[in-house]
Length: 290
Image 1: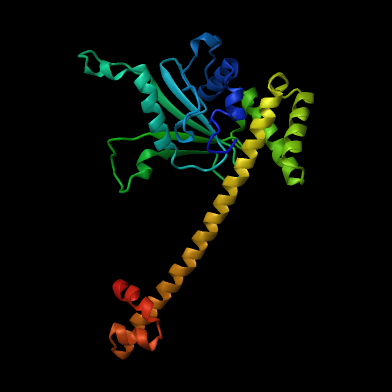
Image 2: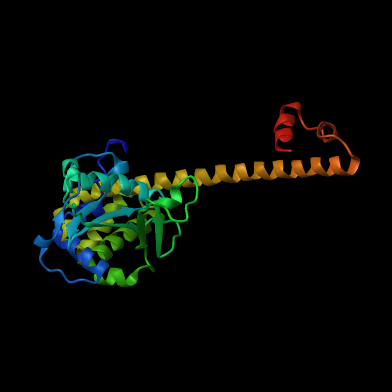
């Protein structure tokens, strides 16, 4: 399937945490709790192939808290806005619009937003994205805010969390095995298959990989191909940014030269630009900036 038509639920992280046991262990590791009954956890992730931009990997309610978890292999500061879209849809299910006209207070679970980052771009161990960071102007005390905690789960980061959560650690071992084999020049499908077999033989999420072998292979091929695609776009974006930076630097230097000539020789802007042999097509641009 093309990237546009695949469901966002089609990734190994989500497949792993469809299992309530794994999801509960991740929650316990995140919150230093010890819930043991999977029935206490109510999964509320939206079903169906929903637009990738508003579909999250795992949503569940436990202890009056609505948790929205997502795995990301690319840096995305727009997550607060994505989660705002999602939580609004989720809360409409929990508190239907008709209930808002009641004189009784409507109680809703406390939302908590987490992104588990495992991309290749260098990122801090933990950071926070805020909805207010996306506002077109700064607000000292924004009336609408949403905070997303981004946790780096790559090797060397968040080690305590990975020690407490066997499933998350196993997932990252698998990811790193695939990446290592890709760097060694092994084709993507072979790299995924070899990493999967190694995990089974080393008893790393062995039962999960045995039961979901075909799905894991298919999802991983798409995921790692998408990750490479995103990285290429990022590099292209950086190249474009560099080019624009150089262009701005040239313009800044030219403006400075025009001002110096105007000041030193007492010339008008037009005379200074003519002396510098600036093309007629660019004169208006510099005149406006002057």
